[in-house]
Length: 234
Ligand code: BJW
Image (cartoon, rainbow, N blue to C red):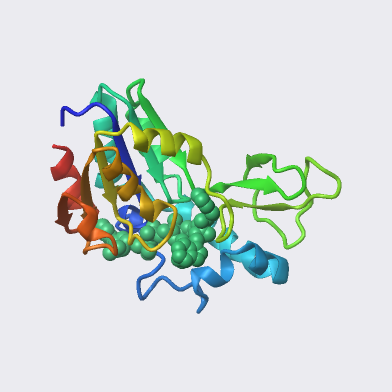
């Protein structure tokens, strides 16, 4: 692993063995709802109580889970990596944050939660973000703006993912791109491998099974993240 500019993309598969459900597995439904039915601005407008409840329950669950060997392996890698290391996670859990807090990373390290963070809330009027203040009600008033409400700080379908300028710059300059635990079903993240290839990067997939874009990777290793990630990072 001598390459300089590293971009790692993670998805829900990396947190699966911590006990956080993935989205598109058989058990990926929440009380019978597809993620596409609760994770949209339209769903929030239609039934804010249902959507707030979906996220309140997931926050409560998150408090009881821990980072696993795959999160820790990436934190160890970040601590010894000498070049730029951008970790882009689609996950809204805080398991990478906790793993990296235990093993402080090198100076070239950055973590972007491109789909937001469960433990934060956002004002619908001003866009300001705050720490999760406890369970949110359907019409939770915003502390920032009299006409605003607090919504989950989550990027829903049809909304612009976070940090895209930084991610695009890193992909354009990357030497090695590694995708871990994601099905490749959701864009723009699913297109990152192609952008990395255009930049001339080597591309590696670490996933339980071949993803939708598996053929775009130079190397694929399939198995549980807690096994394949520690072996890959060495
Ligand atoms: C393991 C494992 C183990 C299991 N070890 N592995 C038509 C065509 C193309 C695009 C579109 C389209 N129609 C609409 C779009 C755009 C849309 C989109 O992609 N829709 C698709 C459904 C087609 N995207 C958007 O709307 C995004 N915004 C956008 O595009 O803005 C415009 C834009 C323009 C230009 C530039 C940039 C932007 C926003 C997407 C928001 C996604 N939000 C969600 C929910 C919010 C978070 C939450 O509530 O928790 O984010 S959806 C959900 O999917 C979540 C995830 O982050 C995301 C990705 O899922 P992930 O992580 O890949 O999970 P799974 O379950 O799919 O896969 C898990 C994988 O792990 C599997 O492969 C398993 O095998 C594996 N695995 N156990 C290793 N132990």
